[in-house]
Length: 364
Image (cartoon, rainbow, N blue to C red):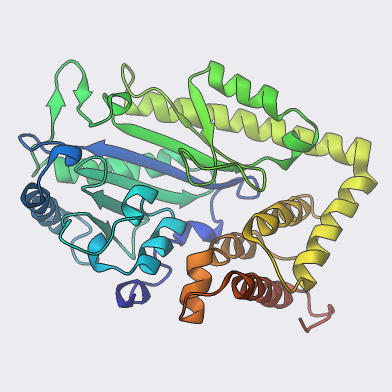
């Protein structure tokens, strides 16, 4: 884990909530899938071929604008806990997080502690460039990813077809190879029972939704990840602009739903918010799913200015650092389930106690 400790806020710059609409949009991510011409896709490549891809990509990265800061983390050289930390920070996928130590080399992630970008090497494709920023900043994330893509494309021979675009191991990514997404908190639409209509609406315009960790993950705490489905037949700029416009519409629907809640069920809504805050402030044992549902209520209260604290930044950090691998890492050991629930509750109490106004009770 020394590599992780050496990098401040390793992959967590987006938690600072500096972008627009951060009370609703936690983060924006743009990911580009690319493959090297002349090499088998990762699923068919040998150990030696993956190693060649790793060395080729890393040399190109070292010549890019990331060259002085980039840290390479090989998956099979990391502990299981370290890989889980990377997964919880949305830097790698569950598939490579599950790799065991051994000869399956070439699978790595390259991370910059300065820029909000990372590069997965030999995951599903030879390389996947990712930019992750806070708030609704789709165009900014795209420009950062596009700049790095241009830099690498000048020294790498990428698999590209004049008619189909970038070639990827999964046919659904062929074309731009781009997945742009925004992670939204939508309790208003859920509580007013308008969420199904909203999700059906985004599906009709070529977008889809997933849980907190993307494909295959469950929706918890009223957090929805909205992303493009189409990668073929449109430019990256068109896809990014389309996502930004639709997400802006969803944000406005969520704000409208929150106004309806306060108008038609104000006392009930306030009671839910303060109960959620009270449970988090004093609980001695918390499951992660329970925590996420309670955080949803507190986050709503902060957005509606019903709670004077904590900040959105603090809520974001609770969400990440209360996950299992982060708690184990903080404790320096693998915690038993009951101990982990207790450590989670203790961590949350400390964060909320520190976020309390000076006139509030100081202990936890």
